[in-house]
Image (cartoon, rainbow over all chains, first blue to last red; front, top):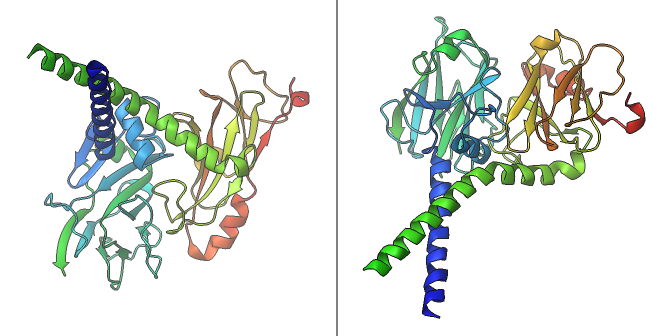
Length: 191
Length: 180
């Protein structure tokens, strides 16, 4: 009887460890073998592709279901600024750069549940076709809870991350995914 | 002492097994839930969803710049004919996903050269149906899956026009009497 009780308890502990470790590694993308880091941005060229390893496939299913393969779209995501500090919902951020090498691109903010962040202005994203640029073609996009003039994306008090989508990425991106110039992310003021 | 080592080893081995099974099964599990969620409305026909906002909660990370249309496929018995629309002067694509989430085929506006196109999705061992005109034939790696249409809202002023044009797309089950 004592053996059976130990067996059940040990199995329950093993189950919790197995499922918990799987969920943690998949959610944070820790188990993926092909993560590419470019400044504050992270991506995987295997995402959505048939050659993805099981951790990449599970990660995509959990946080980016129905992702396209790399020739159609590359998805970079960021939950830190360019100094490596995690996004603080109480702070505003400045995204600066120039148009990436892609037929179309956009930056979208998501809440911790990976869905669009409710806001009265419905400012979920800024993209190539609705971006306001400076005379030298550079741009600044602001991320904050409070609306600001110009290019602005709403963030959530519960936390957020952003996704940079590059549709039909050019050869510069495809062959230099880790080094190609992407927008920088700088923390501004905090409340 | 030996007893503790035995139980620790037992927990380690079982936990590792459950870990691998969980990671491996997660994509198919999530995909089956999505297929079930939209299946009733979109099996063998297209569900034209509204422009995503914070109420869009079927699939994570929707893009608010895209109009999505979705159809569930089940080619275990009959092939599926997909007819694309041809929204003008904007990006659009139709992508095919297996039941393990793999994106096994994509067709976009550049490849279509501005025209409406026909794609036949067939299951393993199925005969090709008779077709008039040029078609693209795609073999599905799994009996069930999803077909997702994305249409970019390239200009807010053109939203009604783009929305109308994307609704010309079709997903139709090919019945046995249509097969050669």
